[in-house]
Image (cartoon, rainbow, N blue to C red; front, side, top):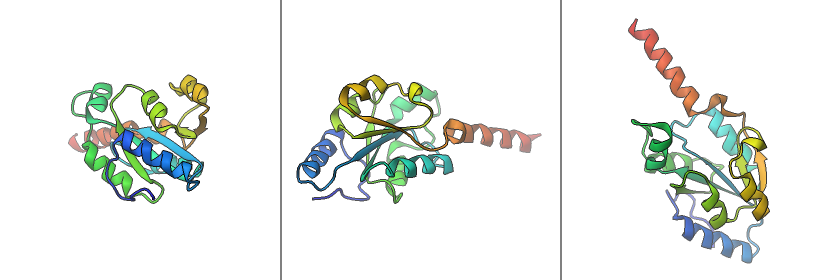
Length: 167
């Protein structure tokens, strides 16, 4: 029994069941959960995911749904729909499974998936779910190179480049 590499999106509860069975059989020991919108995959996000994967045997990426991203980032977002973002992430060597979440935070996913490690960018004090992580005994791993190279920064650079061409 293994994860089906390349499967686009795992329903969260189904993935939790598979991970629990793999753990109970001793096939895996450490599951890492990373999350985000991943609207325009770029180098900073790849570094984040590769760093996250180094903290365990299985890297699960929880993607914000289109509706959740739209609520957070506003009209016209996400740039790519969930299925395309999942396909791109699933093609990365370091990603073992992709699921999605629509809640404002990752708390429900942490409770359902029960990862050993919660990978985040930034500083531990910036992790909104840090109390839930502590309650559940989940390690927080700060990964990647921060938000400076995230999708928002890339969108701002694209907007500036476009302004420069229209003058």
